Image (tube, rainbow, N blue to C red; front, side):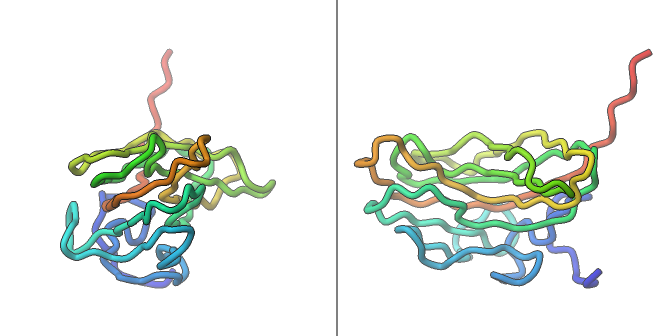
Length: 180
């Protein structure tokens, strides 16, 4: 509706800025993140990327154990539709057994639906694909995809290190043929 150009991503993705190419933060249907919150600094990074010109860098200071959605983007989706979520994550010395993962929040006419949660990446890893299926409910027209971090149960354990995310896509899948 805003007649904005596509900014990379897989064919058919419903995420407008999957590779952070716009450089926008806090605009409607763009990524939303706070540059500094709960021991986490978040910024665009042109020196480390999976594709395109930049990625989103998340750096933890080692003094906190946050439970947070570090960066989120809202998008329109179709009801009763199968999607494939995918994102690329790179980590460097990301401590603790809770690293960076993704949450998909669905919103319908009756409120928020159950949250879909991906696996988490931690430690030191090259660019790693995180993907999962996502099925919208019968009245779901909006989803919010978030790069997230879950708090450790051991409250004394603090997270430090860096993660980069890039190429975050949500692509509708063709319906499977019915079996006769």
